[in-house]
Image (cartoon, rainbow, N blue to C red; front, top):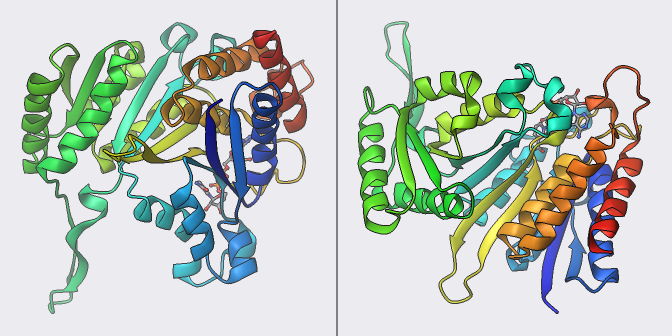
Length: 370
Ligand code: NAD
């Protein structure tokens, strides 16, 4: 039976609460002989700071590096608001992304029919929506040099950020998007601002050439990033996979997130380069939400974003597509049956707790495998 090394970093706030529900699911797979997950756990964020004075220890970084996949909960909270900048909770996540060279961020926006009324858009626009935004995560204007504020000496200052992309960075994120589209509805929409930015001209040229050379079977279209923002709220179902740079991806994926209703529903994956020898790639899976200090310890957290992130690991790190399909169907099934945590509950029905939602998903999974 296939065996996989999974490294869990629950983190702070509701992180450990939602991670506990994922552990019920790995236990289900292990107990039923469907897969074998070897699980190790570490500390990240404020909990790592309290234990080691760092946002993640070198020993835990080594375990993350050796794992087949890292599952990350959430970090931060008021307790650590005053700690030094380089050991603040978020530094743990940034180090993981940097040291594991996770250049591709995948954020699905799926609108379950049962939750279509929780979206701020009309039901017919979002019901059944299933798109993925592939955002470049390690380059572009967030990292380009020079990056500084200079004093012009005349009472004025100048803030400078540099938007910069090399061919290889655009090609590798493009490949992730085209590969993903082949496993879905076979369409990629590439987005930049080639009308006003040189990096956008190059982005467009490189994606067009890559498509022609390696992925002619996939449908490719280009949309300017501002127009795409408008189309996302006007007619989001026209998209399948959207690929874009770090800055536009940051904004557009938040817009897409709101189409689906709640932060508690949104999973994500961050992927690195595939090792040509082992055919494995570094990968970290995390919910989009943070540590939610306002609801920590109350059993109110929705575990679906965290469980959905594990579902993405089943698909993208372990190649267990049938298990991923069954887990996604189990989530859709409990929602169809009317189960709601407080963040997605409609008036009338009594919401279930974090643990009750996790238990119901495990039970639905059990029925799917019966
Ligand atoms: P947040 O995502 O933690 O919470 C925003 C709102 O959404 C809160 O009202 C919260 O209760 C609710 N919410 C979030 N996840 C939920 C879930 N699973 N179920 C039900 N409700 C949920 O964002 P915030 O309040 O801006 O930040 C809180 C802390 O989290 C801060 O310290 C921030 O720095 C940190 N943060 C961490 C990450 C991360 O670890 N990747 C991401 C964002 C924010």
